[in-house]
Image (cartoon, rainbow, N blue to C red; front, side, top):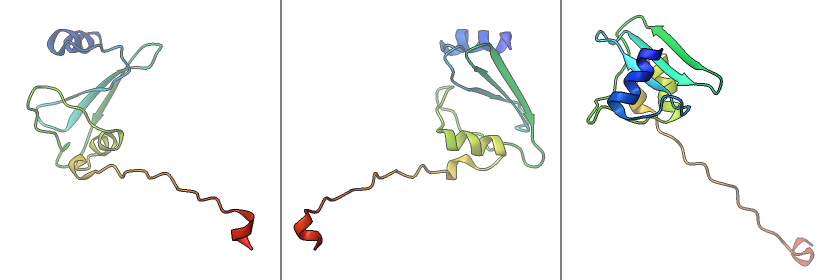
Length: 102
């Protein structure tokens, strides 16, 4: 964990204690390590997936950001690129005067 935290700081100039999830994959695309700070300590999750492996994003600058839904799909081995966040629309309420209701 400490090695990955140091890697995040020195290679990406990011703060591993920010609460963000930092995801690293193996060369074979079948294993990932996730590093995060939960407010009390560093947490590392290690997962090996069976089958074709994780669908991994093409990186242009070494880092990228995923939405929560995309991350969850990646973690489950689903093609995260097909996950689209639906826009939430607040309901609109119209008030009617007592004369209009009758």
